[in-house]
Image 1 (tube, helix red, strand yellow):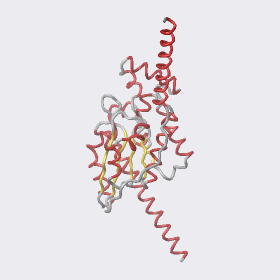
Image 2: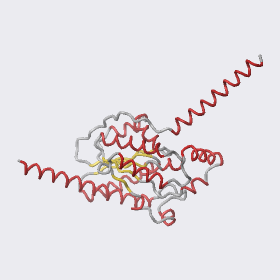
Image 3: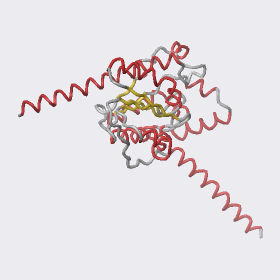
Image 4: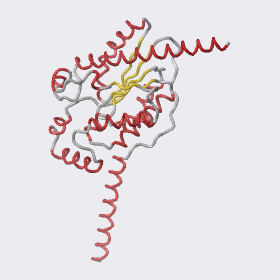
Length: 276
């Protein structure tokens, strides 16, 4: 009887260990890339821009009209900006939500977007996820958007106060982050590591002429001054002034891209006329 109880106890212990190990594997493993679905079309001349991702996209809802007005003033055509973000999502979770979250899928499917701003990776740095986790997730998001002829505008990891975010967590959370750092070989301040990883992905997949990157230094490069001026008290999320600065950088990038596309089309038409 004692041997039977011992064997049962060992079996239960092994099952628990295997279950925990599998849970960790699923949590930290990069996503499996899926076949993109096709989004809808909107038969009008309105320029539509999507903001998707984490809390930065979620909190952008109050600023949709502002960036739309700036673009409309410059382009002299109707512009609509629509934001959909879910607070706390990592890059993998954002990618999976594109397929698994009904509201997210409807958001992407019911309109024809020309540009899509992606805020992803901030929570990866916060939760100390791995580089391959981030790269493969971003690759999946980019592939989905490009397959629908939507130009991705990627937010490079901003200069948020990652050390303050760590210190403000409960002890249990700190221990989990320490474990993540060991498993993923991710240091406490890993922001530059993730920026370099994005550049590596863009280079290896030849995305350079297909996506835009909003470099943090173009709007967020004054250290502690920016943390006080552009961020909320948590030094992790933008305040109204921060969104105003960021939106000017995004607006500039969209206008540059539209100009580039127009010049390319004009050159192609000119080349075609010469061949006739």
